[in-house]
Image (cartoon, rainbow, N blue to C red):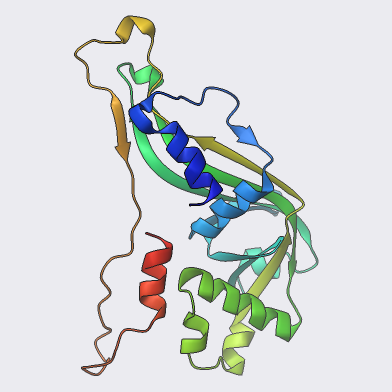
Length: 224
């Protein structure tokens, strides 16, 4: 059991323990757990003096994050020299239903990263980053794929983001109702929200009998 799971387990039974203290922290280990468990990062940057937030796939390699997109996209081509950027990954764990609409909330885990994003120009680092991003989604998938060809490398941009500042925000437990509402016949509690990978289905041109690659069940275990 991970340290995060132990913290959650301590908070959940009977909804007796409510986290009302400051939900933020600078626990880098907790941030890594959240980043490693997520699939989508919302990346923020400035483009032509306007804020932009783009959902992107990513991977963490030690204290660096890698994100990728088409080499012609604004977030890639306009940030080649290194620019301040932010990235947020949020995992939604449940809807917190209180007796008062005012006290409704959500259980969640969020990691917020600030740093400098720069274009990866070294080919070996780009390949390493693309392998990490692919394997973050589907563990072991990079080695199952054919080798990338030159035009694919040219069409793909990778940004490296140094994790200069990391913070987390977490909410667990049940509703925090006012004393006057406790024990009334209005329902209150938590509705869990789960994310799971479904049963895979073949592309139309996959020959009959082609086995499902090992990366698929590995991803289903990872994100269960």
